View 1 (cartoon, one colour):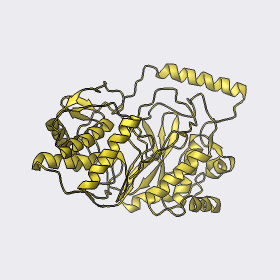
View 2: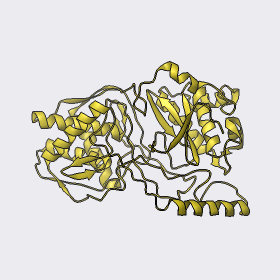
View 3: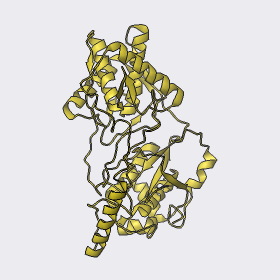
View 4: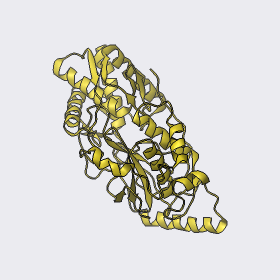
Length: 391
């Protein structure tokens, strides 16, 4: 077993504190225990072509930079009273509190029940009256499992645990035996103790497993123990499909509009098709292809400040520099060329792309080098969703 890591190269620095959390549908039968109407997903500061960070990768003239700085300052003032809260970020610290085995069993049972009913993880988990973030809960589950396996009965201390930096998953359905899931728990705890955050994934005999899937996995194990008084001999992982990020079933016919070329999304261009084929060469899963396309655009295009569409996918590729609209055009063109549906999401002052993989829409905002494929965003401020960007 090993863990994924990753370096972050920043394409632009956020002006407003971005809040990090994930509440995604999972590739298993997943999901959660308690939701909060006030909690929203991460990265919802308005990072746009109108209110960008100060360290943009762009060659602005002095006058342009002064104008941009003025816009930044105005946006900072305008938004300084707006605080975005995400699960696992703006909650009161609960580190150092003690959790008993019985309390952890109850929480694991609640999470399993919620996941089975809703096919998603909760925003947070309440354990013994404490609001626990998902990273903290996974650490508690893994440590609790190790306590159970070794016969320890003492309480578990809640730790401060951060989210993974670039979570990734590529796992097939199957069973994980007791010996292996205990070893995975040990690896999780060792990694958290050394790094203060969750690993991006854990390698198993069935593939690489990201933390949301692990939360459900260990919730099932601990719930089984609470019911039966022993650990199961194995735990199953089943590939999960069928729901979009909005929780509605999507048919193949409804996706066709997200596969068509447009004036600025030239997915049938030989240049786009050749590059798409090159990027995805050797990859067999749709998720792997979509992630590779996102990573390529993120890592090979710099940021340019201008409004609306100016270059389109081909122009952005040629210039290797683009704003958020043209970044999105290129991501979606390359994805559609690979047979992956793509669409545009418009929020205040910003546009980003989403790619449809295995029954779910994944965010693919390639404008910032610190972003990763599938990174959660709030859905509360969406102004429009398009197959073809109208501006």
